[in-house]
Length: 485
Image (cartoon, rainbow, N blue to C red; front, side, top):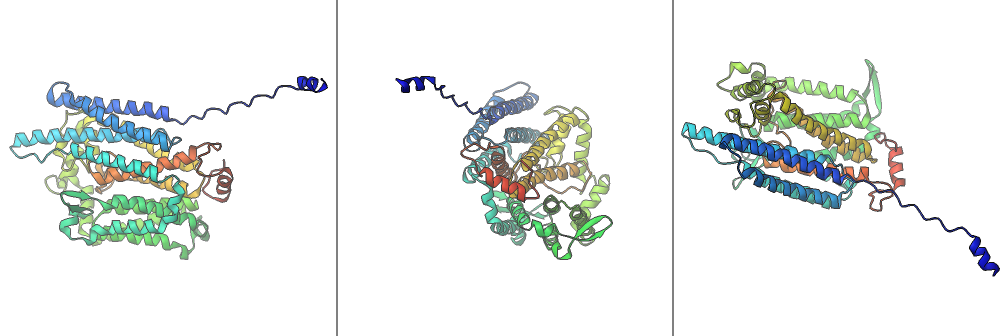
């Protein structure tokens, strides 16, 4: 009786509150993907209406196929990287889709031009680019599934460096009939296909640089003499930067590839600066770059030719400067709002599908549209740097920063070359340009960024977290690159 009275007096056990539902951002990603596909379908419809005089079913078919590919990518991300950044994939889908639209538009223009001149049309490139898009998405899915923890990549830093060097050097040691296109030895051609190994070497060397610099951070951060307010590194620590500089000079000499040399060296200097937080590395890098450019100008005829076209393009309008001057005329014709998709003549620019696709967009969507297109790239790069700030481990920070910076630097060099701010380098515009190697490699880059962002944005209480809170705290407190949680 007494026991039952005591039990009756005890208060009921309070129910545990349910943990708040964590938003993964996948719904926002799906909405942005739908919006991106709609823009692509509208653009394709405008191109078809301009050339055929009426709307046809091609745009809807194209949109359905492209939308299905985007949906597959979204479902894979939802399944294997649910906390990944929700903006990166839609940005890439929009850029890739608009690139396909412009390639198809250039195909139609070249076909019309061939009919007017009574010559043979080489064939459509849009179908091939769609095939490369499928291959790129397959690699994107494979990378996301195979790499569940981005820190595993750091274990294979030197192996990736060896693979990257082989891929970078291989075209220059092969016979010119296999590797040379337009004077640059960057390709491997076989059985009707061509591959640019340097695009994949870029990923390997970024991963190696991130792994190496994290392991040598304390040594590289040591200061030597102070000169003009700058704390210079010790002479013995200049080895990595000099090695990167010599490698880039060797690529420039042997492969005649100014763009790749500039991109790799600039990337390594920036990663050094992020690692050590010493501006002196940037100053030394700029001095080495200026010295290499000066020597190259006096030693190599192809480099002098690029500089001469850059400085005086209208003196060579019918010869070596024809491509640059035609692109400048196209940009001038486009003006502020452009001629409209299908309303210009961008096909008159040689190799407009690859090297000068930015000029094609500038002519038909104008400065206003081109700024919007570049803003999409700006969103992509800024989200990549945000991932670098959020992730706790040092390797992830450098890897995300390197992957994001290489897209930004590559875009800057391309746009600067088209607008005559810098000499034209022949680099591809990421996700936009015709070409399989660039597109496939950049889809792998996207997968790596999404994997890092999934680790960065995953909540601490989630059971599938790639690192424990204790280890994350240790990484944050022990790293000069880490952001305090």
